[in-house]
Structures are given as structure tokens and as C-alpha cells.
Image (cartoon, rainbow, N blue to C red; front, side):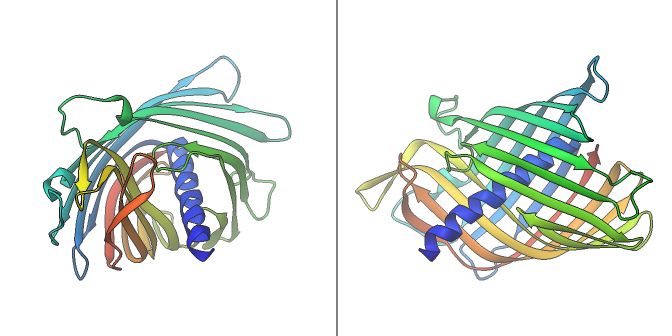
Length: 295
């Protein structure tokens, strides 16, 4: 029971984090590094995304078009019964189509539809199994810039669906943010909780917990132990750590994170997305740095 509870909670957290980031970032470039340490796996990821806003006729209404690309370098030290070179390199590309508009009583609605592919591309061309689809629907009430509110807050409610992480059912999203002091704020809910110290207009520190990971199609399949054929790989991480942000402007920032991996699961899966073999479950450190241009 505990195993399945953690599994579904992990999926819930990941998709919701993804939905929020995609709707708020106009552009982002970052680099993630997980050293091997005591584990079997080392991991490097370079990610770049942009969303181009198109203002529509209705006030405060925008259409967003964009791309989200990741290159993942995945290395294993341990030898298995299969060719681990098939797992060295992964490519992920998503097409973002987003829409945001105003509703009554200061509410806004955001919708994102994201077709794309995730694959190791060992067949040198795309296949039907490489194609993935994601979608998000959120309702936002943002009072963070309302001068009539003594303690600014933001409430987000919504639902997220994705085929890109191996869970084919809708998942809810709840987030409540409040700045209760000129130098302090918090964000409570699921998928993430953080506690933030605003040192100055340009410098901020966060204690946070969140998820990261990826899943990808294996085009040629991998024969495991001579009996099972793996068709995909899935990596899920639960992180906790410290983040530093330097804000060049209100919308452009540099960030750096140092985290500890609280939970780490890496599996090869069959065509029905059932786990075949565990590749790694050791805890390690996690580092990420990058630039963001946000709404």
C-alpha cells in the first residue's frame, strides 16, 4: 500500500510542477548534474525552452507558442545482462501551445496542450511510440501585486494530464502562496512547498522540496535477462534543498540549487509500463543552475 501511495504521489507532484513552470516561464536555460557518488548512475541534463506570447483582442488574454528541448546524458557504472550503451543518450522535445485569459472576480484560466516526443533515437528516426502528449488546465487568482491587499497571495487550482512520465490519468493541482512579511513568503500545497527569504530586491533564498526525473521510449527495446523486453526507462527523484536567486529585473533571474535526493528510483519498463528491473535507488546530491525569463 505504501509503495503505491508513493508512486501516485510522485506522479502527482511531478506533473503539477511541470504545468506551473510551463505556464509561467517565457524562456529558460538550465543545466542539471547528478554525480555518481555511491550510486550506479550519473546524470547530466541540458534544457532550453521558450514560450512566445501573442496578445489577443480580449484584455489580458494571450496565446503562447513555444518549444521545450532537453538532452540527457545518462551513464551507469554497473554491468547488467544487456547493452547499457543503449541508455547513454536521450532527446526530449515538446511543442507548447498555451492560452491564458481573465474570468470574473479576478480569476484567470490557463490551458496548455503539449504534443512531443521522448526517445533514445537509436533507430535514427522517430517512431509512433516516441510520441507523447501532455495537457494542463489551471485557475489562478493572483493578488501578489494588488496594493489593496495587506498580505499578497496567489491561489492556483487545476488538473494536469501527461503521457510523458508514464501515468495516464488526470491529476489535481493546488497551490497557495502568501507573502506575510516584506522579507518572508511561503508556498503551501501539492506539488511543492517552499519557504522563501527575500534578502533584498535582487537576492532571495528558498528552502524547498520538489521532484525531477524523466521517462523515455527505447526504440529498439532492450532484452533483459534473456526473457523480458524493456520498451522504456523511467527515473523519478524527490529532492529537498536550498535555492539562491539573483534577480537582474522583476522578470529575469539567475538561480542555483543544491539538493539532496531523498528518494531515487530508476527502472526499465515493459510495453505496459510495468517495472522490469531497477537500475538505481541510491541517494545522492543534485545540482542545477540556470537563467529564467518569467511572466
